[in-house]
Length: 327
Ligand code: F6P
Image (cartoon, rainbow, N blue to C red; front, side, top):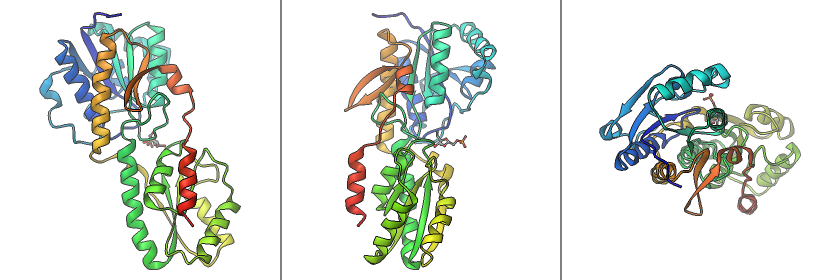
């Protein structure tokens, strides 16, 4: 079914992710390519509530493909969580004559998009932009690859100093309640172990693995801790391990928000470009209340509620590989 959409609003919301700019650029250029007007909504849903909305043209998005962050700014809007806030947002949406909304963000932003699109029965399409990779309906989210590369580069550097001093490092990475960044950067960075929220690894099993490494004369030891893991923070875990293995000289490094910045990798730029165009083509073809993603290199539209509610499992094969390689 084809719907007549003439004016599209686009916003970025939640934690920023490298490649969000590339996605906005793709949305803007695809709209103009298909003779539609496109409006940038600044600071996420707050921009919709406060009427901070400006028309964009083909040149508004020049030279942003390679830049991290989001030129549209981002926020986690408390006001949009309220019915009152969403009414204000819808009023401005109508006032500007917008026909559809493109939301680039993660699960929190999509929860808002889901409620908003059902409350006012309007076309909304989500583009997955989060370093956490915790959305079903897409193999990768925009920003995840860059974040893994940033974390892995940091781990490489930590390993240099860890080996020089024969130290054991606990490196904490982001990901909220998901272990995707942890698993990928741990395998890419050659970590001896990783602790993620999805697995019930105990302190005993970690200590056992470290003892084995010591017995095998492992030159350097880096353990990756996902920030949302059940055993506590990297500092908590380091403290507990110290009680068991007092011969280790232990240090902790929390990578934090550096993982959210930087120029997007080619993988993220291409993903963002493809999803941005697919979002607009989806809207033209009547797709709504869904998230556009990429599965096995194919564009897929998933109902937005499903994308946020379906659990996205870690790949068990990666744990098997990591175990083999960490001896
Ligand atoms: O969702 C992206 C993310 O970077 C998470 O990995 C992290 O838990 C959270 O956002 C941090 O949020 P804030 O920038 O609000 O501290």
